[in-house]
Length: 347
Ligand code: 1BN
Ligand code: ZN
Image (cartoon, rainbow, N blue to C red; front, side, top):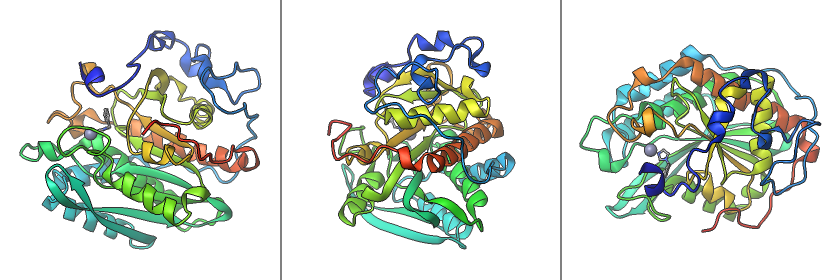
């Protein structure tokens, strides 16, 4: 079974059934997803007091879904992007070209992997805001090393969220951000080089979390929002048990505001992904992931992960919900729980 093999602690739950009808209007959404509305029940596993959300602040930003899809196609055209591949180099050149007008930081390092030391490189595009504090939006740019001798090009797993971040950059570019700074983190080496373990996975995010812990950056991060596998035409974003409950609630509130709640949180799982190294450092995190790709997740990590399974609409829904979450984070700046030093995810 994919789920048990991959250590997902709950799998998809019966909650899927609860949302079969009426969710678009918010009539039968899971109780845990209503924490920010005044009449809502407290979320069952929330570790923070409930917040009364203020109205979102700042200009309404929406992505261009067709352009996002073009970025995804460009990345798929590059081909496999595993550490050490030509595709990894081409992806680096592509990001440099697309983000040439941003203050782009490159974070080159060597991943210590079961296949030896592999060169990897994170990219961080920074959009400065007026307020003290940073919101990080992240995606992984690599494809799995074990699939290097196949045509696997990760249309959904890798390219979709990378393309989405580039489309978000288009909306942030040239704007005076009145709220928090927004940093877009393009992370290398998310995939296992052999088998997924704590030391064979999340190379880029583990490296960046350690670096930002050392230089004090993690203390300034108000929220770390990871997008992964969000291009699936049949979009079902999970509620993730390893994410921060109040941030998950805020994302659901953003989805409801846009009428997209039927695509969010009908199922629940505990994901190990690029957000976990930051969660361990007490940073509020959320993994926006649709880990139900094809029947029984059968397209995941197979050569069936191709562009025809994706839709611009799914990129639009995820992108706009993330942008609306930014507005909610900025509007509720004075109420956000402080980052904690207590590890949220066992290491
Ligand atoms: C997501 C996409 N992941 C890998 N490719 C992270 C993951 C790890 C998902 C283990 C499931 C299990
Ligand atoms: Zn993957």
